[in-house]
Image (cartoon, rainbow, N blue to C red):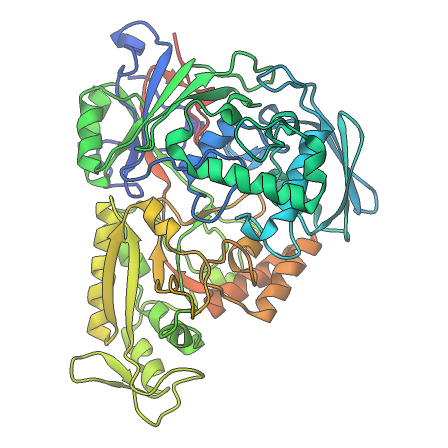
Length: 602
């Protein structure tokens, strides 16, 4: 059996107990067209999507609820970013072959950056120019509150002006000097040039008018049209918007059931060309169905549940490499601080401390995830160890201790009710806004499709209820969970969710600089639970303004201790089982897959 490339990740041997999130990534032996020893290389590859995780967004302008990794990976294959970062080369760094920039030069005073574009064309033969970068800024600035990556003060607010001195040059002037590492790795990477010559339209069949985007009214009308087209999954196939791409693939077909085909962009003139002309992305409604497809050789690259790792030798015998895919990520449950009843309860730090004391992270990691998850105690990734991580987060300020949890609650006015659940005692101040007689009972909405996730919350439910905290578990497909948890106000009818879980493969994957302004900054679009803390905001801002490593460590420490969310074990992204005839499968720790780099070997 051929040895596994070291850069792919940690190898999982036949005796390994487990590794995975929701499902483990797998590759069927020769399914896409008889690859490797089973036959001649094929022009196609079948990739099995995770169970219950189906693509539902291909517009390169993200909105809330559409940020799942499988969406972003497909988008990157069709629309290259201005600056590309990934972890597929062993470190998280810029991969210039996968972006549209030729050079990036920061001014000596740090107040501006000059970006020169590669000589590239869109798939219709029109050159990619600085106007396409300016167009992105026009529509995002005019609609920033709807853009999922928005956080007040960050992109695009931190860009005071966008100049295009010629077709190949963009000069961005900032409102102040920033940490250049953060700006390059976490801000400029958000910019995805979009085709001004084709997308400056507001209706089907409309004639493109690039000048329209230069007014706020016009940019809003364009945004509204593009968002409506993005929501129309049934209309993706044949939509002329998706015929104009910059990446190595174009859209071949799209079913609203989740079956997607990418076809080689024959006009692609970049450095990250497709290695396989056609890649089919196959949806599955259950892990069992996916395993059956893998064993039957119907997929070349897909997923298996963690429990199947006891059968690793069988997969190896079928011609697969089994590889652990680690992620640069954190996993957490956001509290909905605006929930009409429980929001005031979650707003009490002592309550969050008590609940954190009830999460037995070490046991969950070792037993439920079979060693395929690592405890996480704060807002900075802990695997691998890194310069951003504080000692306070490393040391776990709230270790598993049910007695300590009960002491915190009882010291703050909660008494055990007759049904074994804590109640805020009438006449006792349990904290601002907490009603007399309030029951400490939480509801968790969790993504379906993973035995490990189900078992984790079953264990937590048992532990919490034994300690006096009521727990209700509800489950739904990942897309449903993500679509149900937009930031909300208490009086809004949709503000009924409490603690959502979308972290079977890790809740949030960072760019190269793991700052948290998009997750926990006041008003940030991905701050689902509406957490707001002035000191935490100040620490996040300091980490963005300064290159001082202490700034990130102070942010790490405060997040570990102040608990903007409930910290949970961070599962590995996937366990890959890869056809031995497939090359270019080095795993990206940022959680993206890069189908253009896959190829059938000799």
